[in-house]
Image 1 (cartoon, rainbow, N blue to C red):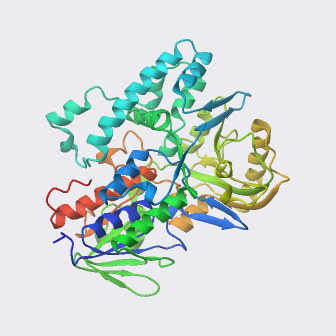
Image 2: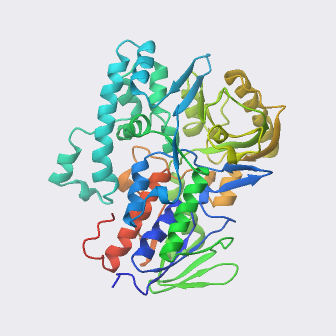
Length: 501
């Protein structure tokens, strides 16, 4: 008999973490019902469709393919049963604002030669850097990501000490990267992924150099139909396992306790034995629970460092944009002022670093014939004022910057345009301060310093998603679902031999 047979579970929020948890718990025998505030599944990985264009609204990079393989393998399936993958070449293109253009390709030898053009010995340094990144990745994933060490004492044993020996655990990414490369452009190339972790070079732990192994060694892929196709695959898997889904049904209150919960919604309450919240953690505690049942008070949430919000433009344009790769970054030669406007003195950046995604370079189905599909993403500080006048002025600035630094002038070719920023992140996703990602991966907000998967005050209430371990990003939220399911199974009797795989 499966350990959760007969147990009913409501999962609040159909983001990646919620969909993942739902699959694991349904596979363990639970009757799982997922409710979602918005019109479709996926949370921040939802899809926007307008006049023949289809946009991934949030995440657009398919990284860490091994994590997706592990997820589907738990259910004796493979990702290829639900979606195909295209290995991108180049992985991405960088336009530096002084006129330099760089392509990072799957050919590591070519990349080493590129690095040598900027700094003598940098090719060999890249090889050594990636060796360290691979070690960090393999040991870090096995012993610190898939094993949820949520208490400091979990780190104080001989096995952990032995596995951690040689890892880059301490110090910042800036310090770590400077130990290998002097040229500022090479440092930027090695650290651009920090934007996806919601941090800056100065406040992100050096352990996250493992992302360079993900980038350079594991590769960058595009799934059929974009990240929305991955969401469709996860939802299909969930249906096969017995998960049911309700969209446009927001949770308004969590009542009761283990074995006798009632999740209130505008269309009536839902009874359940257990509840898992994939909604914004702070929103769940502050808006769905009474004060006496909150594990963290307002001062806790207000004291934390949050990942950036974003200013997004979803653009359908006439004609091609051949100068842009599927993934394109536009970087000022000095990006420190931009990070300062995110983490130190919040403001709209004067000389922004930003990202362009052009899925129509790979997938003809995302745009009508003769048109291109792209979005522009500028990381900005959470909680910024983003009224119509500010957004219109910034939109004009960004489109002018794209034209100046990539040679692609979009302004007279736009046929579909939608913007999305701080206020939409707050309204659509109930996101604290309008953060696009959640709690940043700073030196003091990693591992056991992140909020718990278990409610501190309510037995039978669990949390999943980017606020919990292992943290931000689609692969991490996928793993978060596994870790939350492990907590539930540990509390209710794990099946013999089950280790989360």
